[in-house]
Length: 73
Image 1: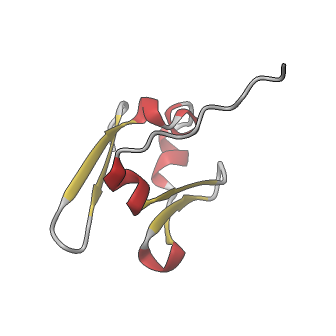
Image 2: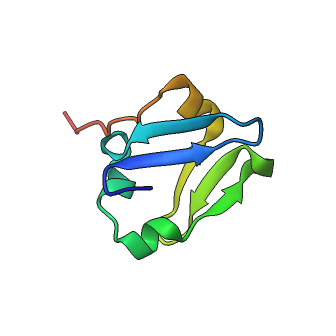
């Protein structure tokens, strides 16, 4: 991971790189919080316990940014 990119190496040899701007909760954390992650979802996701953020490999493969929070009407 860099200051602006999340890179994930998959077991099948593929590497996925996505902009951290897609995931504001990760973008606005410290480097220490970003490096504290665990494999989750039976190997199909990543969990950052310090910020309670979860990303799935399926979402990363689809190129799916985090959903935007809706604003109250």
